[in-house]
Amino acid sequence: MSKQILILVGHPDPSPERLCRALAKRYQEGAESFGHQTTVIDLAELEFPLLRRGEDWQHGELPEVLRPVQEAIRAADHLVIIYPLWLGEMPALLKGLLEQVLRPGFAVGDYGQPGGNRRLLSGKSARIIITMGMPGLVYRWYFAAHSLKSLKRNILAFCGIAPVRSTFFGMAGSSTVRRENWLRKVFHLGQVGK
Image (cartoon, rainbow, N blue to C red; front, side):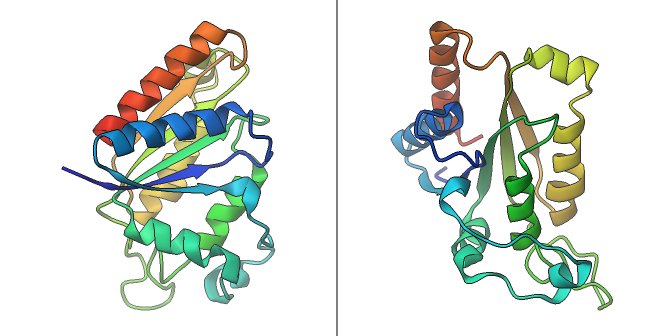
């Protein structure tokens, strides 16, 4: 069954040679080869303000430049979020993007209103792909994949997105053979739409 897939490249550096961009491109190629429809949004191409107050998140206006991001999320059956691990977390700009677009009335019910705890993005699934300098097993077992757990539980599940699957690519940049294997893996993930 064909899916509408949003691929969000969460690397703030616009350099075209970034691994996250190569992974996004291969995922897109795999998805489209199987008949899925894709939309790619690259964080590095967006200029937007960061939120500074809770009131801005609850009642402020979404910046116009981010309306296409919300529309792509709304239209998607499946989201793919690809980013590098920076200081143990997603890049701050990616977190800032999620704070802007996943607002009450779009991602969750309006606070203080009946049904304010509704998860408005239910029915969508996600894949999180994280690149990192350390071995993926160290991140998963020693550090307990803490930032991934936070993204899955406190952001995506909070909005109703489930299931959320994850893929780690550790020791990024260490081997051309490893990179080619990763590109093959994401191509296959794109084909199956997961």
